[in-house]
Length: 336
Ligand SMILES: [Ca+2]
Image: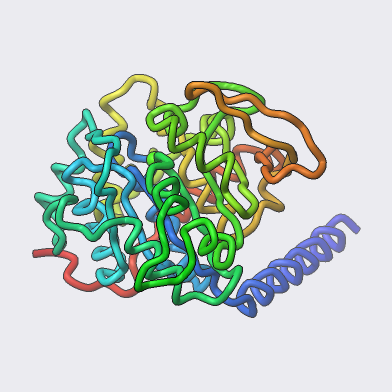
């Protein structure tokens, strides 16, 4: 009897799995723009690995990876990862006005650009982020684009403030309203807190959160804080590449990372591509900012939602780290 039950469970779960795969395969890849500060922390590296892993599985169609950080190694770092994963031609961009200029204390971007091929040698040489946003968005179908920010809100504020030009007769605000389905933001702490991505450019955060014309889903500090990744990636001798190299360099440098690095940015990419359920629940309302601190007001009709835990943390951790271990399927120019 017991054996029969186990067999039935196995058959049922196999059927369920194949149904999930069939649903995923039949879905069209989600058009997505990623905005990253890749540098001060290295969970952005994990998040970019997730983006490329999910792209290789046909779940997402990356349209651009844009820097919100003026540090000179940021765009070269993005280029290293895009090139490694076989997408060297993804449009880039970086802020041209006032912006944060932060590097990494562990010097991992220096290691990456010394070791791996890339064409863009400096963030300063990248096109204007607003230009790239307007160019990419103008060409997309209405309400189709998912935008993910895992850094400062600088570019998105500049985009909202942009004027009609040769790329589109719409203002930035109108262009976002027409083209962007929703924004997924690793930003804030809920129900209240003071979080890095929000306070580093608090004026931009304030503008974006008060004026963004489509829904915003927040992955708050408290979500990614619990998800420690990197140890399994580093310990796997069958793997190599820039993602493993960064984690292998950085994890031993901070005692707080003994169980792995916290994985804030990966959660934003995960829910942007696969949806909120079954990983998380949502609480609806409105974020409110004051000098880089945020609070929250519940409101059943509010424009914002934040993630709440649903799937056990260990299971999300396993899923994220498996995606971070993804090896490129379309490798070009991997070594010099
Ligand atoms: Ca980040």
